[in-house]
Each structure stands twice: as structure tokens, then as C-alpha cells.
Length: 235
Image 1: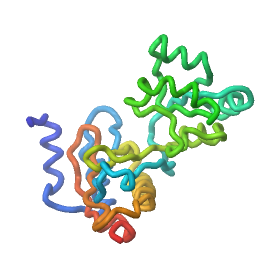
Image 2: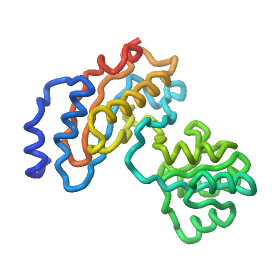
Image 3: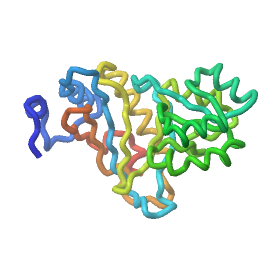
């Protein structure tokens, strides 16, 4: 793969063969974020599990203490008092049958998170083929199917992210913007890793955190020493 001039220059700032401490790696990811926009810093974590087995799935959600730096648009499927509570909490759009029709009939998808009360899931289930592939389908595991929609909206707006394994046993998550600085990014990164470590399946054997890389949107991947992301990771 041929990279651009800025990427090549950024790659000179770090040693590809080195495994860095988290704070140092995050500092390098900021320095390699040379685009004209505020680049997102992402973490890519490969786990010692097999996602083909149901008892080795790793999935959940966590509120990053410093948010993601993104203005999160929240859609809520609710009625009555729940709908009013969602609106009061700052949801961008709230509806029931009308919202389902808007998505089905008009193809409207201008939201980043979908939340639903449990009694709405029979209705929301019709949108599975539309929301599922985009990772927008409300889920109890992610805390987006809940009777407390107000808290769910507040968490989503505050920087709640969902983490889940892909088919290659890697979790990909945004942990903030380059403009956050090392301290805030490191706090977000640590919060995410702690959540993933706590979600370790009982069936997982051997080293749990196999590798960890952080990178800016347009920059190279900086490798972190997996032994430095928490002693619980290797238990």
C-alpha cells in the first residue's frame, strides 16, 4: 500500500518494532495526527478468545469519562411518560410507530445511537435489517434497551460507547479526539480497557489481551505493550 507524504513523515516519529507504554503511545498518536481536522484517536484490541463460540463473546458498553468529542445524535423509541423523559434528557428525536415509518419509508438514518424501552422492541424489531448492519439496533447488553431511557440518553450524550468483538477477535473503539491531550485520552483508554478486562469470559484461556494498537484517523498504528494495560489482563 502506498501512503501519502504526511503519513510517511508521521511514521518517522516512532519505532514500528517497539512496544510503548499507553501514555507514550497516545502521545505519539497525537503527534502523528497531522490532518487539518481534529482526528479521532482509536484503540484496536486483539483478544485471546474465539468469537465463533458463544461462551467467548465479549460485548458491552462503557461511558468514557471525557466523552468521545463527538456530538452524538440520539433517537429514542418510546411512548407516553417515557417519551417525555427522553425528550427532557436531550434526545434528538423521539417516536414510536411514526419513527419506525420514517426509517422504513423514508430511509431516514440521521442518528448515531438508538434507544428503546422494552415494550417497544416488538415494533423496533421490524427495523432489524436496517439498523442491525449499521450497528444501531437497540440491545440490552449495550444498555440501549432499558426502562430508564432518560439515563440512557444522558449516558449516550456523555460519551457512552459500545465495544464488541469482530470476526477476527478484535475490538475497535474511538477513545476521543487528538485535541483532548494525553491525560484525557489515557483516562478514556484505561476506562475502556478496564471494562474489557472485567468482561473476560470464563472460557477464555491463556493471555487475554494479545495486542493493542492506538492510531489517529489518518495516522499510523502505535503498538502498546499488552502487559502494561492492567495486571488483570493476563490472569
